[in-house]
Image (cartoon, rainbow, N blue to C red; front, side):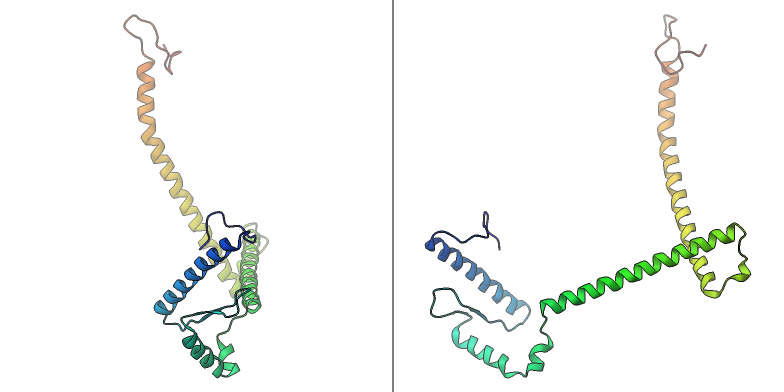
Length: 196
């Protein structure tokens, strides 16, 4: 919808401003038509331009009047049922983010608590008989996470080992052939020059 080089300043020429306004309004009407067709929504647009005595109306003035009258005929409760104010929307989003952050912090706190408990058990500062059910479940989850991390690391190391095994034989064979005597009895500049 944005045009190339469009700035947030007033257009100098009245003629240019009118032309730009006309294009933007045509685009808006096209989008409203698509919205009403695709979503089966009842859309009405009323634009009050500065300097104009009559508003610009879509789809037409009589149809817009019928739609607005129908909308205003509903009770205040029905009209506000699906009405979303920007402030209300932002408050809801902030509340959801705060709840999500609180859950993350609680989870991280529980994980740290279980790590400390695990270390105390490992160092012999605590017995398993001293644990309650929640602590036992937390330790089981921690041990499962640690095992998963170890398995992943083992898999990575195996992949690294396999790739290094594939690369080593070709490097080793090149190094050994370069280090042998040539036909004149002189040593080549290979990796094994000092070997007699």
